[in-house]
View (cartoon, helix red, strand yellow):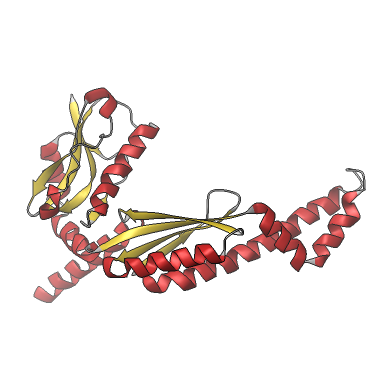
Length: 266
């Protein structure tokens, strides 16, 4: 039995974007291609999926993101669904998904039109940041030098404390550098989110919702920051992406506006 995998929702006029040739989730098993289920002016990007086929391979994750980011790159607003959203068939997509939240989807798409997500991942050059810490904290240097020649047992406490001091100094730098990144880029975006980086040397993972007419200015500001931090912090800019980090706010705003409109009509 073939189920229906759902990537996200777009406005129906934007459902002509070419995604049919992209590999679909589960493509290696079924040869499925991406298409659309349409209902009332909105459409869900979907593909067939063998019902007993487990999800979660790296290829599946890449296929899910590729479809959504390809739609975003066309300039069409898209509401990404979580990876792994599967319904019984296209009829269930139309009736349970598109019809069930039609007005909220339509309003959220309007809120996101002309905007895309850009994600900036910042990571320290480890040797460079450690040199900064030693230059700025003579007490750390003193403790390091004092314990350098001692046996492990004799210097155990001091070395634990040394590690704590270095970690505290790096954390303070991380906070200051995140604030500087936010100060330079947030004014060029409609919204932003900051999250803890996954890697040990990470500074921050920052996502920005950027309007098309400010995209060039945003990218120039990111490039200028990368030049300023060259040799100290590595910056990787990803985008335009589907607005993964801003869907909840767009939907919440749409539902609040709908509730206010309904209240006004009573």
